[in-house]
Length: 580
Image 1 (cartoon, rainbow, N blue to C red):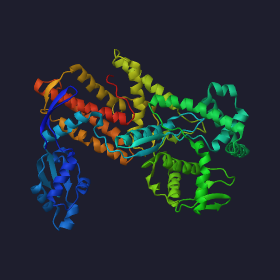
Image 2 (image 1 turned 45 degrees about the horizontal axis):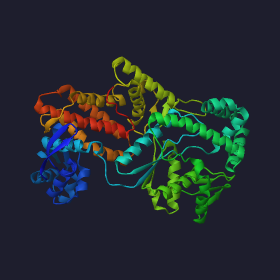
Image 3 (image 1 turned 135 degrees about the horizontal axis):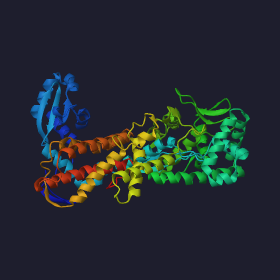
Image 4 (image 1 turned 90 degrees about the horizontal axis):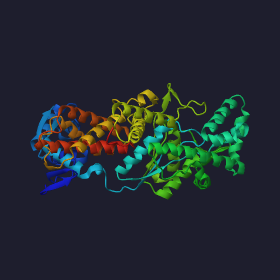
């Protein structure tokens, strides 16, 4: 332990002693390792540590069952030996229950460690300072000439949150919007435009009109199979550089990007690259040639494939020589490796593409590139409407832009009813409305399907983003109202209800780490909800503006909670208004 010092941070003067940088779990693991005479490493012990189901059973528990065989003793005997040899400043009491060592923390010491660290580090609390290199995150990736629907929301917000979380974990995130701007669907669209398109109507409302003729193509193609042959020929002409086809394609792309960027601005999302599938047209031949040179390319019914058993073969080129998704994704993978040298690559794409990515990674592995192991598909479930997948082909979609606008309008109406004197209502309504849509998605396990419900999305009570935002705003308003500097903050007399909050605040860095390792933003959303609930329970039972000797500590405690709520929302891509 180092010398005492007086720290000034924000409005608080904190008298403290500098503590070891280790968190509670690391300190406990180190102490147990010494008690066990290094029979297990500290990392092994950390992995075994558990949180008891009930607070009265302790703050952390160590099971001794795995040691029973090697030590040739009962778990209870091992637990007793550990108990008798534990020496750690943060431990107040140790109880042996069954084969568990149940440890109770010294709440005063741990409280000071946790809250001081948060006040000092502020938004950097939980950040890993060591640079880990680049991570490429491929997300959103809508098809051009099609509306930006609710079906695109999941990839967009999950990918953006993962990019934020990756940066918190020490990576430099490269955000890539791999636009669907190539493929046979553009042959269909070109044919549809030639037959039913109206240039002026499309110029006035490009996405809306292009959707109409795209849907019409599929309706007509069900009766006339020759339309699909015509579409395949049109796409082949596009690949071969036909001027008319390329001009139409460029028009479709420019109009789409303009509309997409409106949505991205609403969501507060940016990208480092919009290189879509078309960007890799001149880069595929090199990959195909290498596959051929490495004798991996096999002719099958006139097409060329790579065997990736036990999966079906990965189709590289079709019988007419046209390329496929796999060809372009292979070219993209090699380009990104050369251009960004990423330590990891996340493909945030729906569950239904799992086979495609498994095939893709296996092909690269068969090409004898070790970095194939750094490629990861991050799948997610669908947003369903009436239990069914939304379909652009059949025109059964819900436009994301309309949902966002309605969410903002609903938020504005709620503000007018509950806080009509609030300043900057429009700005707050935008933050709350958009935040509600994003949070509603991210609070769910990404692998689960979500039933689209505008009513549920607009419900700002309970398990929602606005609930977390409101908790942050409540604390911010309180701190602004008091706005005083305390001579000393000792974190004493916070109240019994503060301890569960302290334990949760201490877990924040681990939650961030787990959310990245498991590519699961929902862990942070659920954490934020849990923290907001615990704090509101504390707030209801404890007077913050209390006597002078405890007011400073309680205000500092509130500031810590506010810091973590704001950072949790920021990682999810959600703003935290100071007033609501």
